[in-house]
Length: 182
Image (cartoon, rainbow, N blue to C red; front, side):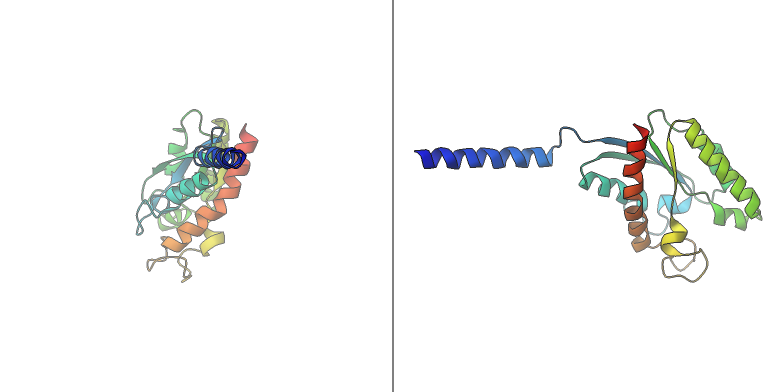
C-alpha cells in the first residue's frame, strides 16, 4: 500500500508540473507593435514567416504571453512611418520599427532627413510610454542592395532565414525592454 501511495504521489506531482508548464499562471504579458514597411509585412515570404509572427512564437515558447500586432504599409518612407507612429495603442510596451530608410533613398530623401525622422519616431514611441527598438536588418542581413545572401533576389526584402534571425535577435531585446517598462 505504501508503494502505491508513493507512486500515486509521484504521479500527482508530475501531473501538476505538466499542467503548470503548459499553462503558466504567471506568464508575463508583453504587448508589442511592429511598425514599418514591406519587410515588417514579410513581402516575399508571407506573414507567418515574417519576423513579427516568428517573434511572437519565440516569446510564447519562452513562456511569455506575447501579442505582436503589425502596422506596416509596403513602400512607406520614414516620414510616412513617423506619421503612423502616433497610432500606438495604449498599453503597448514595446514598439519595434523598420524606418523605411531604403524607401527614403528610392524617393530621393537624404540620410539626414531619414535620421531626423528616425529620431522623431523614437521620440513619438517614448511619448506613448513604450520602449523603441529598431529592427536589426542591417546587422543581421547586411546592407540592402549589397548582394548579401540575407536578401531575396530584389536585394531589398529579407529571406525567410533572415526573418528568423531578426526575430531571434529581438527576443532578448524585447524581454529586457518589457522588464524596463514595468
